[in-house]
Amino acid sequence: MPAVFDLGKLLMPENHAGPDPGSWTAFRQEMPIVKRWAYFDHAAIGPLPQSAVDAIGRWATQACDEGDVHWPAWQKQINELRHLAARLINSGEDEICIIPNTTAGINLVANGIHWQTGDNIVTAAGEFPTNLYPWLNLQRLGVETRMVPRVNGRVCLDQIAAACDQRTRLVSLSWVTYDTGFRIDVRRAAQIAHRAGAWFLLDAIQGLGVFPLDARETEIDFLAADGHKWLLGPEGAGVFYIRGDLLDQMIHHNIGWRSVKHEWDFSRVELDWKPGAVRFEGGTSNTPGSIGLLASLQVLERFGLAYDRSPIADRVLECADRLAERLRQRGCIVERAAQRENRSGIVSFQVPGQDADLVRDHLMNDGVVLSCRNQRLRAAVHAYNDENDIDRLIGSIDRLLSVGCT
Image (tube, rainbow, N blue to C red; front, side, top):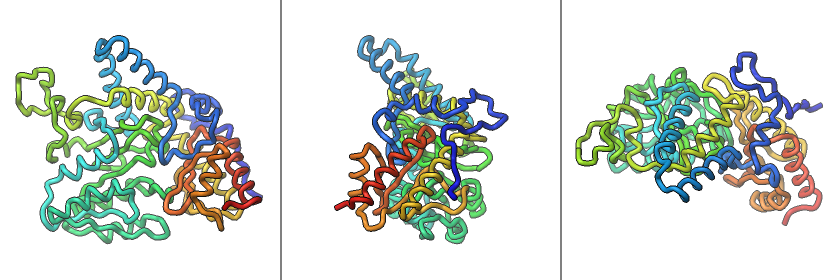
């Protein structure tokens, strides 16, 4: 008899300091997309909460009607975004800068390390290309990229450790793999890198916004994540973390007028760096994107996301497990980690005898949105999804199986 989940309610931890939503209806009411779609594509692009839409709309109206009059207030919001991002991962605000995308953050590291011929980077095969191409580009400097094969779609940290040697300068891994949804033990991965005398970079885009992350406790050195997936922000605004004591060890890139302490004294040309990671922002910010991301993070924090706990994660795993179970009941081939600590909101599956792209089109016609990755369907569940959304997806699969798909 399959377990029954009450997806309408999830009790918050007793020590939860923020408002207890009691049910996830309030979160769902923040998401206008539910009026039309059963949306399971957060691993691609997350929809905006109404709060983010309103914040961006206010900026657009002000920019239209009054030009730069409100610029100081906009900058205050961007500063607040850095502060909130730091609070959510338990880092210093001076260790956070706003970046346009994950690629920009990874390239800050790729171009910032003093590489020597014979150095190597250890990563996993099957990583999203953003976490491969910057390393492969270092071949011109004589730097080797070691891609450790995955085992049945899973990253084996023992094999990552075995691939490291005395010339390993960096281990770079995704928190959650983009296709199968396998989630690594971040602290152990960082320890593996450090035991080899290397640094650890976390591509956090598929986990940040759902799972708690303590930058201090995990001892990560770098983190990059765009905000447009599980953080529910607009495209083009994300966060980069660099451990404070590494700032002055890096070659500086993306340098501009805002990188120095005297940013408003344009006649003084002197490389007097700002003391924190903000020096890497260089020039003008993506103001509407940053303001929208701030509003989205505030929503997530309101529903319990913090560096040391996340009722959102419990909710997401519960919903995703329920979806996986119901898909299996219909004969679908589901790829999902056996251990809860390695699972995420991503449910990768195949409908036997059916072309994944055609199944996706069929689901779209029924108002269900998900993606195809590597010949598999990928449903990505967030905390505002509910049993009605799951019923809609499963009902569409049932209709497909009853009539076939050509």
